[in-house]
Amino acid sequence: MRRTFFTAALVATAVAATLSAPPAMADANGRDVRLRVATYNIHAGAGQNGRFDLARQVEAMRALNADVIALQEVDVHWDARSEWRDLASELATALGMRVFFGPIYDLDPPADGKPRRQYGNAILTRYPILYAENHSITRLSTQTPNPAPEPAPGFPEVVVNAKGAHVHVYGTHLDYRQDPAVRQLQVADTLKIMAERGGLDPQVLLGDFNARPDAPELAPLWGELTDAMAGKPDLTYPAEAPDRRIDYVAVSRTVGIRATQVPHTPASDHLPVVADITVKRGR
Image (cartoon, rainbow, N blue to C red; front, side, top):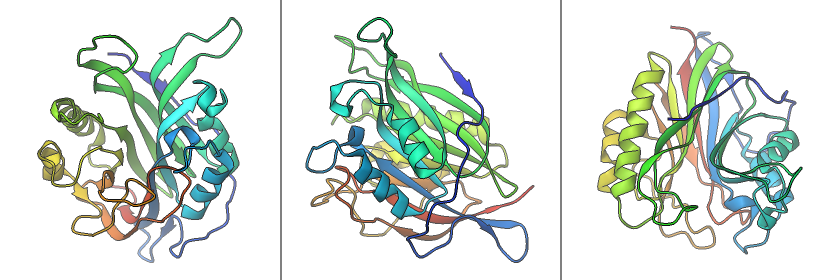
């Protein structure tokens, strides 16, 4: 099982607030820390019209005013659809955030002297990254003929220090196929990793689960985590006229949920999900 370790990346700078709730701050008792977290499938930089426009996505993400954003379908020098650009680093720089990128695929470059072709998931954060790892979960490759389910990377975890609260944040993108078999395995892998890693610290799982909230394969998640938007009518896909919710913020039981929202933007084929949460500082 391949794992990639990483410590703090890009230095953060302040960005303007455009949504109502403030980013991370300590409550009056000094132990509760408020965080805004978000998940966004960026469709390799393309909007709902299918056109690549990274500047439009930067503006959409800036408007979220999030402390942590998990991104799915992130190209890093992948191919011409994203102009061979490093979307993870460019988005982090534009937003003044740190980044950890967890590639699912890491392929040879198209020519000598060119960077490797990578595709996967990323986590952006305003706060210092204390630890990061690119975990493996079961996947069915789209890059090999006749694939079989097997462990593959692309399940990034970062531990951020948010004003003294050490928060484990995971970014995921579950299998898209109609058959839920691989998603079932991925959910089991996810829960095993989170159980091994989290301890007493708060945990946040962000991502595109490619299944509706009542899907049987997601039921084990809801036995351990809280769906921040449970019971709410908001839908996330497709962005132009959403008819289902497949994008999630899920948190461990000790994490408080203050508010959620699904901002409407044409910057991707998915809509982002934003949640204002409360975590405990210290133990």
